[in-house]
Length: 515
Image (cartoon, helix red, strand yellow):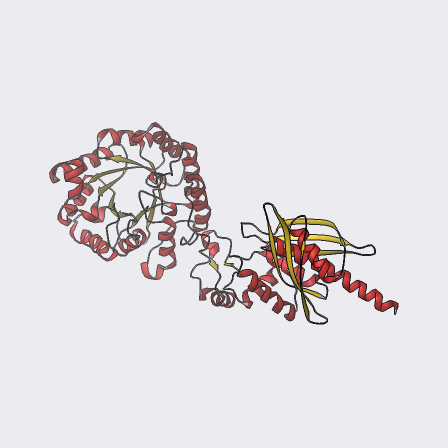
């Protein structure tokens, strides 16, 4: 196949190399589920497994071969007759089968692992490719550890395996040793020196030991490679492989630079990533490019302001294009008024400028206590803002001593807004909440019974806000109080004081009306 094509073949090895990640072993049913997801993603080639390694691997490759319609299904085989025959048997039901055979070619692999000469390795490679071509129309060959193989020898073995019938020759950076500029030079040298290179697609398979798997793959594409071997979420041996989603979106987003197309349905990237993470048990880091939870999340007030005015100020991709729901403006301590106002409007809540200013101040206080503010947090704060009675008494501070054999004791400081006097007192109780309530009643002079007390988590996580809702009563009046805080004792105190304020206001109003 001509190397001048403008389309890059995406070869997915999640089910073969990806499964080799420690702890990522998959059973046959899980492999088939991922294979169907990869087909929906429209990857070009699926390396479904290494059939000779186990009966389960053989069965998985065979089942995938029989069930999938669109992609080429590939089975891996060493440059050994038994491996190649076994791969062909597993691939027999496939509509588009490919046998991928390989052998180590670097001095380290020849001398220490294979203990064979250059000529012996070359002969094994050629013989393996020739045998594979009698069993499948599509054959790929990989000189393992190519990036540490002598260039003259690599040129010789690539040329010989193409002559033997390999339609794709893969140049692996097996241990992640390559540097992008040098790896691109290596690919360019092969194009210059391999006489029959126009008869094959040149592929690359880059590991991530130095964190350069994607960079090396993209450098190789610029140098003429037209197949990239990669895996979902970058899974693979040791530090993993080039990440499929990063390679694909780099090629698509920077088509102006790379000048090539990919045929994937990129809206399936995030769903596929989530499926692979769930089935392998290897979660995706929050800041992972493309598919990480933070990939389209912004907390900085400057970034949020820019996004709200023009998305491209701080985003180079649409979240919808990769299957993410939408840009997320994460409300936290770095967020500004613009983001808070936008979120309030999105939630359908209406606040005056004065109420919004007050809410922003309370929001910043809460944001210093928790990492992220959820919509439920905002709803609770807005409801508090809209429902608050005039504050005759304001909570200034409180302190609790409790635990073990200690009698629960609360020290509370309250400001009387009418006189601006601050009063501090202490009281005991059956528990810390009871002690707080007893103390508040002593300071305000309003005695009431606790008729109902309810507590619930407003949001998720260990830093979730707790919402306290209470009802209190005197002989003549009943009142409700509600408050939220990450400190449940503070929420309890504020809820009780709000109920006390309602009783105080209504009592004062009744007294004025009678005069």
